[in-house]
Length: 424
Ligand SMILES: [Zn+2]
Figure 1 (spheres, rainbow, N blue to C red):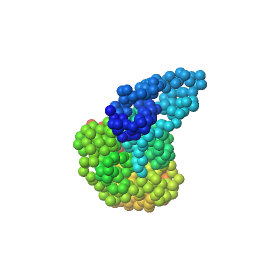
Figure 2 (cartoon, rainbow, N blue to C red):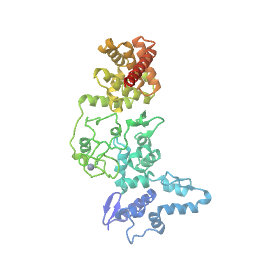
Figure 3 (cartoon, rainbow, N blue to C red):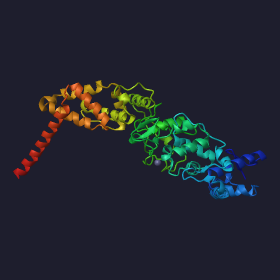
Figure 4 (cartoon, rainbow, N blue to C red):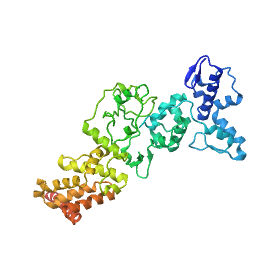
């Protein structure tokens, strides 16, 4: 028979080992992991002289809490909360139980490591699976993918692992009023992907024995690892499934076919895309250069939309085709934003001076410019773009001219349709 002594199995335990083992068992009781779910090495061994109370506690943690509840009812001490695994308690007796939930052994969080990764690495030290840690230790049964959005589970994780609360909270992706809050910036919801676990195989190899997942890999606006420029994988190269957070015990494995992603070929993005991604990251951390006026006073979400829109607008003339206004192109848009208003003026100038204007007229050009501006998200952003266009073109009636053009286009379309019917 072997017992678990702070993560090491001992076959001939000393008296001291038994004491540590007993403490560890009690911690699991506090974690509320059912005794049946524990590995053999962490159950009371047959013949071990556990007190009756300890045995009952480890086997039936919830019933123990219930019995405590009954005995302390007069003092109204325990109220089992729906979210907290142990519930709130003001009783001195139960306080002793709840104050020290810290595991005997813990891990050191890496710089930039995600919440999910912390939970995955911590689980084996509590001798449970990541799912059990979430369910019984953190009171979060919805799975790893939504863990960064659960404030109370994040606090429980900090408590169990003995981590700094502020540090662990700063790794979360909480829901803001209009988007997600990551790195203390509020970005549109589609900028963050918590469902898919994007990975850089080469970086995971360099991590050594226990690889970890990075917070930055969750941002759709960044398409590579920021240190190495390695492209991020979204799908398992063996089975083709999206890499998700279900059924995994290590961040480096596919949850569907268990393929080790570290065996996948390593690809790098071109140098200009890496520097674009790094500039975007500095913007998010507020360590980059300040944004030009009037964007420096705009809220985060509108600035993000401005990046998406500028990437679309600037590419619409010079490339001859439109880049989609999406977070994937936001990095390009950020570069254009830093050179505002020159980047915008240049594009408007090209649009107004392009050959087609001579044939189709000024009004047509204005109408397509206003059409583009109306594709921008957010009224405050559209106002900024419109007033800049009016100022640059010295056309105070830009909106009215564009409206006229659109009306005449509608009329001519209607006329063409009518003519077609009349011919019949
Ligand atoms: Zn797979």
